[in-house]
Image (cartoon, rainbow, N blue to C red):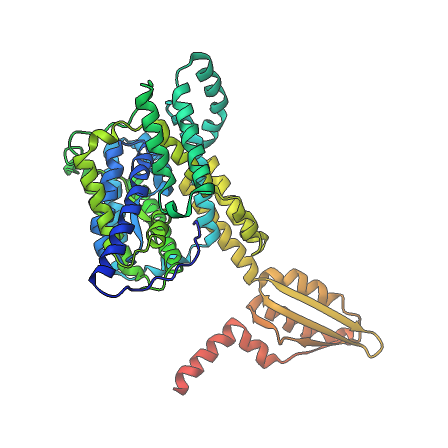
Length: 519
């Protein structure tokens, strides 16, 4: 997730002091959300209207129900790849049932109060997921910038892009679109670095789209433009009986589970990040999951994109001075009003410009600085990030997240089973000091056995277990057997057996039973 500097949010006094900041911040969030809703829809392989509907529902409905008042919900780049693959493999009609089922799963998770459990996913997996998605978005949207359709996978898109550029230059088709896309990226980079302080709240994405649209209109450029229906309501693919029956397809159920898991993890991590930016009310995670579930069920029923809580729009909301959910609700209202009253204006926007915004967003999601930050927490954490990212790029989103979680659990198991064995032999007085640090499990039996077998004959081994966290049955049996056979070599083991047994699973169980009976 993109981090932002902490902003103290205080409640201004008076009605005007409450309304004015939220109205102004809602306009800022609306300007950020408008191009992103359309761009993410195009990146997902669905009509732009599907993204706008999700933005409206995320703003008005979820904003009203949210457990995190300053969190902004809407279509997320994090799910664009998964939606694209779903539509490619199962058709656009499968989108509604999958999103509806994912929303129902989120609603159930919130009702049964498992919101905090979704935050158990290792941050390295989430960062790796976002980086992998960023790479895939860049790979696909580079083709869209040339008014061409992307291929099926990230590696294929990267591999085919040089040839696509050569064909574009030779034929001339797509050159104008490519220049508009590059110009969009350039404007966003320059605006981010050199924007005046007084205009800091003006989104670079909006400025870039306006500039590209003016260039395309004034130059009468032959480029693909946004297609919007005459009626937003008429564009909804309302789910019917056939759509509901698709929810019984095992393949779609698995995809819905992935949607629910990834959307919930991204939402709740974004909510935690938003909490760190202000001093207002903290997030109620289960309530937020319920709100997201309701929102995604409505999006599914309307055949729109899935939603999550999104950090970019949320950070803009906080930094613009929002103090309540009013800002989020109003931003959805502005989206609805703009689409209903000014659809002709949106139809002028070049698709290449929206693709440029997504390429810029994708690079921001990759964020190479994270490598250094994650390396600070150890090579294992960095390995989880890299494994998640590369697996997503090479296979798909679900496999990448599964690989990251599996590696995280493996590393956790190895850390939990780590045992440092240190022995110092004093030949002068025939003693040896054996120090055990960490957790002694069956994985450590070979190492511990090797150390004990290296003890010279006629030696008293004094075992220090002050820093031993636990010992399992295998290691306990090893020490007992060595102590039983040691006299044959003139050796003996000097250890506090009572404490050692208390550290074992059996000893821990007996201790719990004794504690219960004593109360």
